[in-house]
Each structure stands twice: as C-alpha cells, then as structure tokens.
Amino acid sequence: MFNGPVEGYDNFLSFHDIRELLFARESESVVIDCYVNAYLFRPREENPDIFWNFGYLHAALKGYVQSCRDDKSKEQHFENAFKRLDRAPNEFDHIFSPMHVGTNHWALLVIRMKEKEFHVYDSLRNKHRADISQYVKELIRYLKGKQIDAATWPLRYPDPCSQQGSGDDCGIFTCKYMECLARTDIQDLPFSQNDMPIVRAKIALHFIKAYFNGEGRS
Image (cartoon, rainbow, N blue to C red; front, side):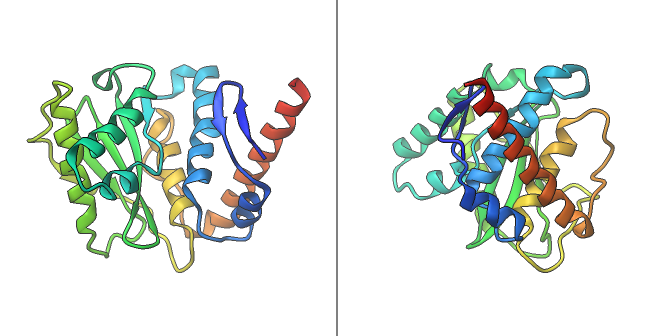
C-alpha cells in the first residue's frame, strides 16, 4: 500500500497487511511502525498541546539487537534507531520501543526519560520474559555511551495494564498502549479485549484513507 514516503514518513504497508489486520491475525512490525508514523506523529504535529513529547524506536529493533553476537553490531543497530529521532534522547518525555518477545508476542518498553525509569506494558503479564531484561541491559549499555547513565533506572511493570484474552491481539494492544501513553488527555489505559475488533477496523480504515489521500496529492 505504501511503498515510499507519505508526507515525510517511510511507510511500507501492503494490502496483505491490511487483510491480516482486519481478520485478527498476529500484527507484524510493519503494522506497528505504520501505526505510529501515520496515527500518532501526524496528530501530534496538528495538536501538539495534547501530546507528550515522545520519540519512537522502530518495532524490529529488539530482534535486530539480540540477533547480534558482538557488541559493535548491537551498538550499530541502536545507533541507526536513535539517529531517526528528531532530537537528543534526553530531550524527550517518553521513548517508545515495541518489543517482539519470546516467539510470537509483542510488548511495549517505554523509556521515561524525565522520570528515569523503564516501564514495560505487556498484555500477557503472567509470562516470564527474560529477554526483556536482557534487552534493557543492552539499551543501558548503549545509553551510557551517549552520556546517559541509566544503570540505576528501575524496570517497572505498571498497573493498571489492559490485558488480552485469547487470540493474536498483542500487537494491537501495543499500539493502543502507545496511543494512550502519548496523549495528555487520556488517563490510564481505557480499553480492553472487547474493543479489539473495532480498534482493528479503525486502524485499517485510517491506513486506507491515508493511502488514498497520499495518492490524491501525488
């Protein structure tokens, strides 16, 4: 659907991705990335007063970092991701880093720069996920090289945290976590598993409208 930049963002969503989104399949990193680029950044630019100052690290970052066997390659992946931010990391309130954890699950890491904490929002909180803490350790090592000493920052799992039922909605929960946490006019996380069908439909409709609006301007 998007095979190039639309209004300054790199989008690469296919009609296959839209079909999977509508029919409740597991969301891929491309859907999460496009959600942030088309669904969060644009309204933030139009209504900056109702959004926190947030940055975004692409959804595939954790997988890239943990696939590396040497520290230099890990640092390069972090460098490429942080280079996409439009300002220095310590100038943000929040930095969102969606994480593909385990074998087929998405969760959200929020780097709360002002509070100096790491928060994890996981729609299946009863699972033990050792790879999350390992990823945070790699991230701390990278930040130290950027003169940000995060070694003592706590890793927290805040409550309340909306939880999913059965199904493949973890990626959509991750998107909704970011939407709620990015806005100053939303308290807590006011959504549940019951909302997922309509949330999927709204996201798909937004992507389709963004595509045709882009076609009309080209």
